[in-house]
Image (cartoon, rainbow, N blue to C red; front, side, top):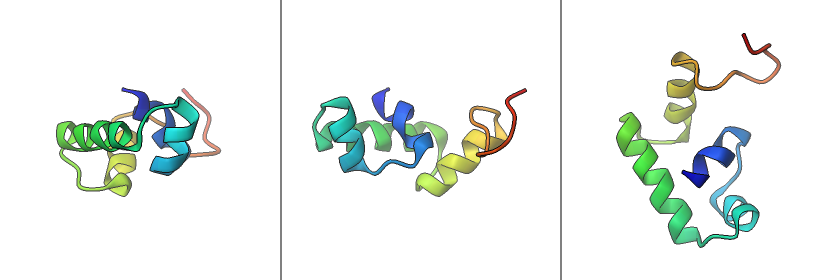
Length: 64
């Protein structure tokens, strides 16, 4: 899922669109699918989900 590559960096949908050369509709679709699968409502909840499950590390923390 392309948006997973960019969301941890805090990129907006338009920034993801430019970086991956895909449409904004495609980015929105991927983001919404990710939210649905994770059972979250927004990016803040998605970040928490990733931290709790060890899928991402908060900035400045060493990866173990």
